[in-house]
Image (cartoon, rainbow, N blue to C red; front, side):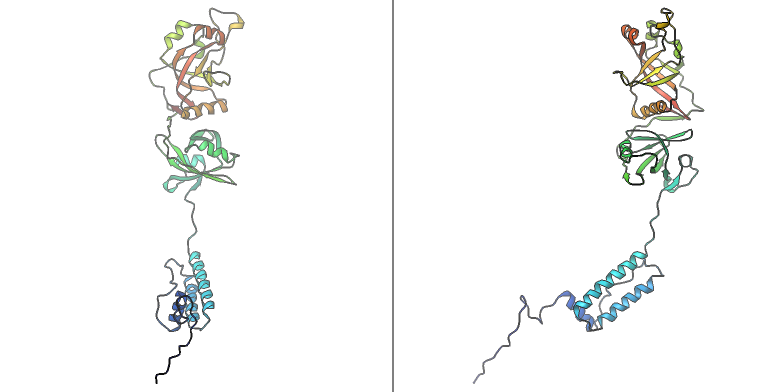
Length: 343
């Protein structure tokens, strides 16, 4: 007689019986308990400093002892993660401290190379800012001025508030002139990154001590020019002149922002009454931004215009009689301190 087979009931978890359900953690610990050789979970990174290597090895040995200790699986897992955190911390301790690639220097030291910096990378701290416009910040130290440039840097610097406590991380460039290309600006409370991806127009420059105007420029004194000399003014159209004049910023003039004026009145041979004696005036055609900012520096420092211009147009006689303005000129070059800037 065949005896019926009675099956022993098993508790099933999902699709597995308890003895069939294997997890990665259990498989790993079972291998460790069985003394199987497995790849080390933590290896000593090569960059670990020699002083930290013994501590790192002790952490590995402790992990091996833990695996053979017969601790419950959950406690082993907790210890496993704890050892991982310790090893990661030790590895981080071996990393070298990051070094600032920018060499601290004054504007003069950076300009003349008195402080050596690899890659011409400088940190110019608290320079005297003369003015800002578009892609330019003009800084000054004594009689030395320089351009710090980046796309829309004037707006970026304006966001940082007070300009007397800024540091500029820059790279010194040599063409078409010596200038500093800015990568970032840092204030005590904030910082901004700067880009120079878009092209920028620079003025040509020359040393003022050795500069001589081109041969096609003629020296002329402002007192030699009169607003009521129609024939004389018309003969000047299209010609180039070098002069010294007072630079005036005019807010109410619809045709120009800048005006050149003679340093003293020029009496007219035709109108000798004291009421009609006036200085010679010229409207200045709006220059490109790289010269515009030089004009602004002249005005801010109350420095005379010393430069050259091309006589562009003569004002109609009724307008000249009303405002005593001779006509419009276009600036060709202008001097500021030790530098001459040219179109």
